[in-house]
Length: 339
Ligand code: SAH
Image 1: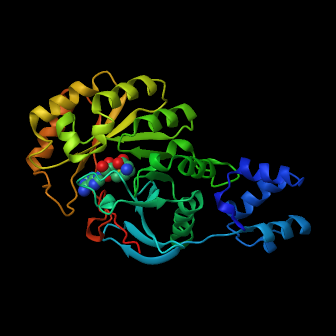
Image 2: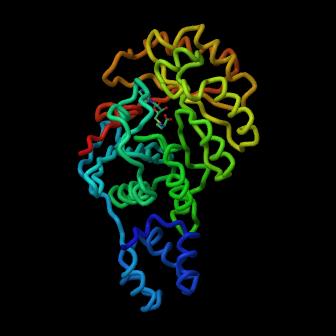
Image 3: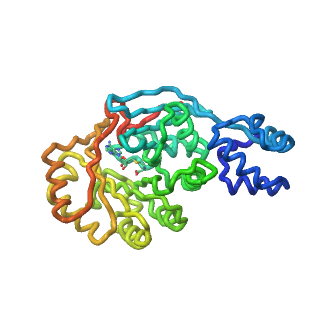
């Protein structure tokens, strides 16, 4: 059976070439054709020997995502709906800013963690994306928009650390100089807090940034809104991050969605300050984006009060401006129906 060539990291492709007794430098050339020259036809790879091309044609194919829908928000955020070969669907979001363009990628079809405020997991998990399906989101959007994508965040549909090896392979292709040549420091992996995989990710030393979706410093509240907290409780999560994250070059980012009358107010802020004391971290506050469910958007006063508590405690925080709400492209609003 033919293999999808974009599932291969450069090392893996070299391994394949070694097995077949072919020159290893061809693997790097092929990477250059695909990712730098954007050619997806072995016949056009003119500096590769004919017999090697024939072997590639017989053994590999190029997968492509089908663009099912493209929506552009009034703030220029774009949301793409992609159809996959098995009828599944995913969404990706491109967020242009004056100095950069951030691409928000999906890592799975659906999600098994069922955070109560997030639409992406409302129907559970269907399957993991392949490395090629992750990379293809980037390629399709960069080919379509011709925009230079400067940053990647694994903050679309799915829990990236639940699809660990495929996400790691995709990262390796993104940062490979002969591949897409992005700096690892411009890639963020966001997790709801899957402790063993956080440890493994830090052990691999890929140089990517880590974001952790916290949303409450109160373990009971967190368990109610994020069932993952029952298996991997807050105290353990923070202990792991303090221990394994202490040698990280970049501070860990904590995402904290502000829900009206639930995790805002002075007490909640003080709890958060106590929890994160002494950690090299920053907090990304995200005013809740309405989805179906029981949650309320925070009032302006709630947001301001929370910010001023963090500021007074000397914690570094940013308040995320929600982008693309009019096309349901904001955090937690991604939801692609699959067959
Ligand atoms: N599964 C990973 C990747 C998703 S990232 C994770 O949980 O981190 C998407 C971010 O948006 C997460 O921080 C998530 O908790 C947050 N989010 C989900 N639904 C939201 C909503 N309705 N409003 C604001 N943020 C939301």
